[in-house]
Length: 184
Image (cartoon, rainbow, N blue to C red; front, side, top):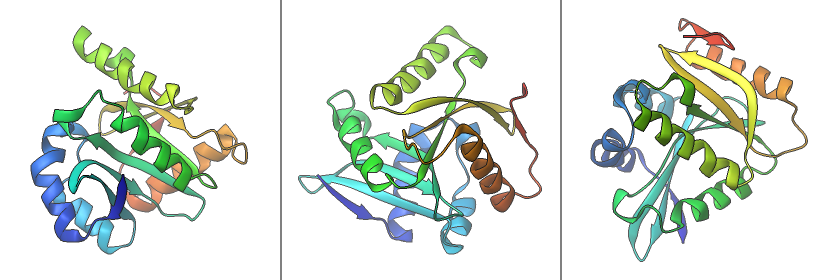
């Protein structure tokens, strides 16, 4: 597998042709927001390429050299369930081994339907099987509740993770109200 940093043109293509289908509307930033983050050097997308075809992508938001937020991560829908996601995630973990890699997953207990709850549990289970740790940090962003996960880097405590996440939120969206460990 090969990993390539996406140009703004490729980011737009992936957004319009994949991300809009891969993520719930209330969880997806607008393309204009992503472009603004990209131009401010806070957004980067990597494409996972196998046999000259994109098989997945990972988007990161960062405002610090010490941490990254895995903002979006998906495998092409036609090949899910074949281990590609695990392979990409292992690359992501290796690339971020010296950083605090944070991941927001929609909180299962706040799902509106049983099917949605199961999907959220499946997502979290996927990360846990790959060695990601579930923190006690809960966030609520624009009415969407998230459980925060992080990589198993012993250099960072849960308190460090909370501080880095708070810094990221306040830097990127100073006027947005973010609730931590409160219900939406």
